[in-house]
Length: 193
Image 1 (cartoon, rainbow, N blue to C red):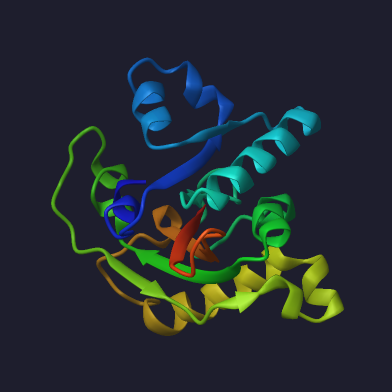
Image 2: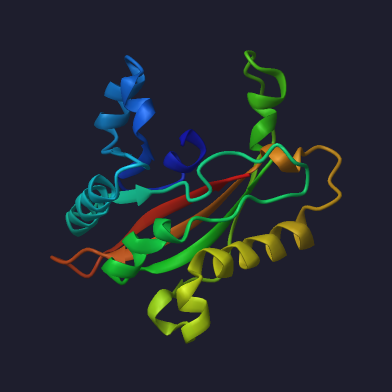
């Protein structure tokens, strides 16, 4: 969250699993960042979270989603992207801009609980609109986005001795226009592997 939050010039909220809402102080900090908490078990509550996210987008607040749900423990492997994670982009009509974030695990995960300085590479890919995709890709936007990020990641970063692929972050930015003006807002979607 911190890596992407500081890179976006606009207010950015995040969609997180609802269990995070139970952690004191962290939940208050996330609410102040316009975060929404998703109940993965309750479809009705999940749809309410998506609708709340669309309302935040309409007011000019960016939204960040983690469609894999958790990090993969397997090196060189992605968890499948949950297709429902793209409903926010689909219903709002925002373009999706995939992002690859490399070496983020070197900050904390590789040597928890210590925090260390690390060189992290963030790369933005070519944006796409879900409605412009062919019928098959529209059905599986998660797989389509995962393919784009995989190509960028493995073409640019594979083989770097300094990174731990299994703990790196992959992200997707959804760009939307604020309804009241023509200024562009960024909405981030992050994927953890």
